[in-house]
Amino acid sequence: PGSTVTIHELTGSASASDSMLRIVHGNGGLADTGEWDASGNLTMTSVGMLRPQTYEARFNMTNPATSQPSPSVMVRASVMSVFGDVSPVVTTTMVKKTEELLGVHNGSSPLEVLVPTFEIKTVEQNTPFAAIINTITVFIKANCDLLPGSTVTI
Image 1 (cartoon, rainbow, N blue to C red):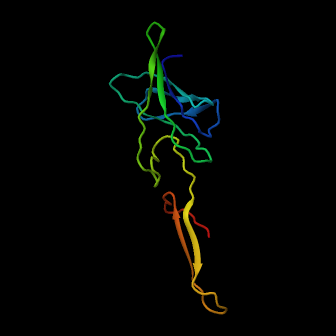
Image 2: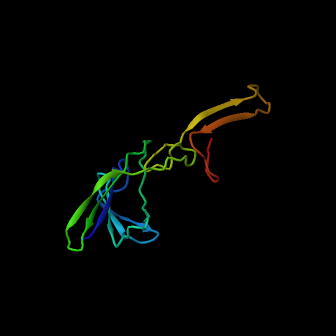
């Protein structure tokens, strides 16, 4: 089909396996869809990429329901020559962003997943006596940021 770029070791995703993922790209270079498989590989086909350009591809995946650290993500490619033969590009580890995101350490790393929970969750009252106004106080501290509009139900 042409030159391909495969991002692999995207393990732990809850995305449906053996499906096509929509690729959003800012400056071309890649086809609009990529092949996703159960092993955590996303293969994208080049529609023409030039050496001096940096290309961006965005795609949506579903995080798992449990916490997990970000896997080591790798990239490999197969480059098709003008004669149709294919030359492999050496597999290499991708550099991951490791910034805090939404209050999660390394939250910008791909498939770094944290199940939100409360680290502190206590409740107390100021009086146990009948027929008296009683003030209930709660203390909560989440393990991540709660953005405006988040709902906390007590």
